[in-house]
Image (cartoon, rainbow, N blue to C red; front, side, top):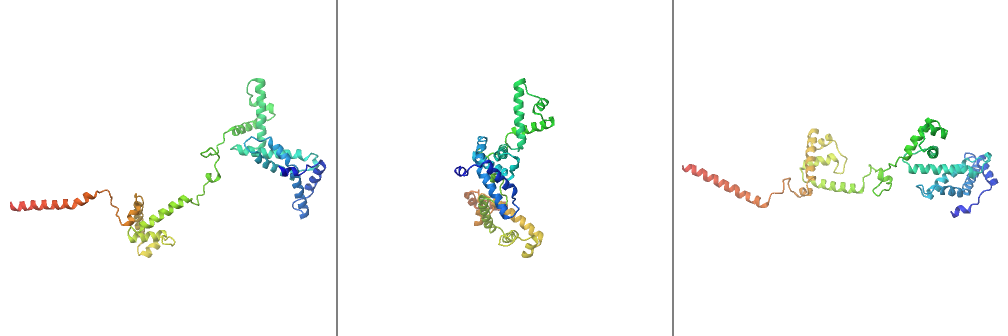
Length: 317
């Protein structure tokens, strides 16, 4: 704000001089004319920044902070400075006000509505509401399309388009919301599927280390086929035919070994403690009590003695 106050306001004569410099010089001309035009536009903009702030204050408390409104108003001011023609006889502030308001209105519409509506349609919607209130106050009922068309001086066909725009304008914003009710960031809406996150990398690293350890627990030939097939030995993955040439087997036999070996690895990976297989344990269940395991040899020996006694009794008979 302090920098804005440092630039003095332009008089009507100085506005015309700057306007003619902007019109008579072009950006595609020689460097001197280009520089003169850019300097004239810059001075015209700096001298009218107060106008942007004054207009932006009228549109505050409508969903955007004043700083954002001023920025959008500056965009309209720049376009007005580039297209100002002093031959029309109007002051620059009068000409620039329309551009500033248009830019601010477009920003408010695009920020608040999920469906973007042109600025001219917003003006028609405002007229629709004003004429509807007037008719209701005079006749105690809502006007029909024909009555509203006569009051606004618009054809019925165009009025139906305005009616559809009102429905879209009043529709609630369907933009996704985060847990806290705020609008999510771009990263939350569109994730990068090509790059894995840190959690996925850590999980993949752990799974890979477990798989490498489990390969040592299966048959040596099966593990060798999987290492060649999936490139686990620091080389490119090989095809079934290339693996068969290295291990001396047919392509079909290599495929069968691969399927069986993957089933074994998957079964061991789904175990509660998959690393126990790398310590030499088998796939048998571990729920048999040690007392029963120790009693099995005694039971089988007693059965053999009983059978032998029965045979001796028969021979005596």
